[in-house]
Length: 176
Image (spheres, rainbow, N blue to C red):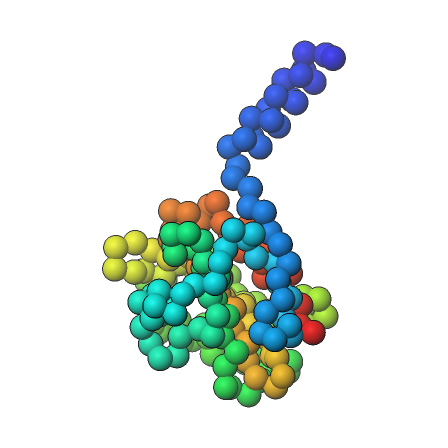
C-alpha cells in the first residue's frame, strides 16, 4: 500500500473514532400508527420525570429519553384538527409563537418536507433555559385528522453530537 493511501485510511479511522455513533432502531408507537427510528438505548420516560420536565398539563403524550433525561424525543397527538393542507399554516403559527416566546432564540431553519409520502413541517432552533440553551427540532404532521407534534431536544453542548441523528429521526417518520 502506498504511504498516501495509508495516511488517508488512518485519517478515516481516527475521524470515525472521534464521532460518536448512535444506533437507531425502528419503533412502532401510538397504537402502531407511527413508525420512527429512535436511539436503541432510549426508554420511555416515567410519568414522574415527565411531570418534572414538562410541568404544563399540555405535556407530551409519550417521551423517549436517554439515561440522563437530558436528550429526548417527545410525541404529542394533540386534539387540534389537522390535514395535510394545513401543515404550512401550522408551521407559520409555530414560527410566530416561538419568536414571541423566545425572542433571543437562535433559528436554524423552518420549512416543510415530504417524508415517506407525507407533508411534514419543522422548526429548528436553540432556545434559552435557566442555566443553559436547548436545541430543538420540532416536526409535525397530521394523524387521524389531528396534529401530531414530535420534538427532539437536548442541551446545547450536546447539539453537535445529536443534530444529524435528530434529522435522521425526523426523516424516518412514517404514518401508517
